[in-house]
Length: 260
Image (cartoon, rainbow, N blue to C red; front, side):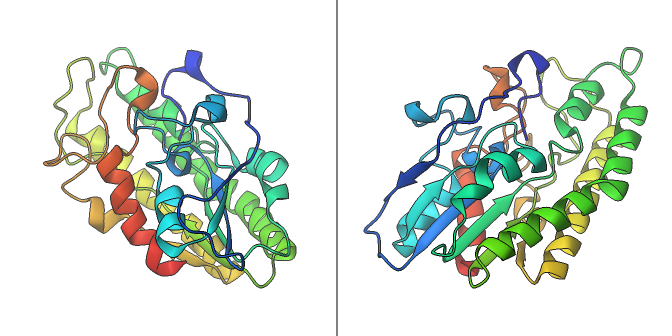
């Protein structure tokens, strides 16, 4: 998901980065697609040439490519929606691609805007309306977009292993950050919305015959205000907020690697 501040929204998509983080095997070509959760926003360290896409060597695709000895084409980009993946990242998937990971959908649901709205005091924000709107998009609009994207991935690399990656719940039930005003009920509804998002992503992945990685169970106890915390709370710069930190990305890597 992209930054929770609209003034930090990103529209530019950087050029593809073909990397060999480990000893690459010529026969294993890995293409990493997706949004800021896939690019590594939240780790605070980015590859300078990736620009506003904010790709990190601490992101799970980079970690896993090194572990399996794959040549990585890293095109995930902060702020990406399904349409952005289709237009700007999908061309990197070719008949020579052996592995694809894809994590996208949170921005289509406007999750960052929902978090921003729910973080406000109850008298100032409309968390209920924001959550309802996000859930309507997840239920009614997102599945069709994902089905089309997944079909396109399959058509471009019909023999590739494709791993679809889901999103964690953001909250443990406690808001320990000064400057945010999440109520227990709001945190529960936001977590339920993350679960709904995963359920729709998984259904589309299953229909396409792709593998699905659900991080929910592993991240329980390690969300915002967790011990240890694997997801940043409200941060400076604000673009780091509500994204997996270095430890969170490392644990994502542990989940994704066995599926590659």
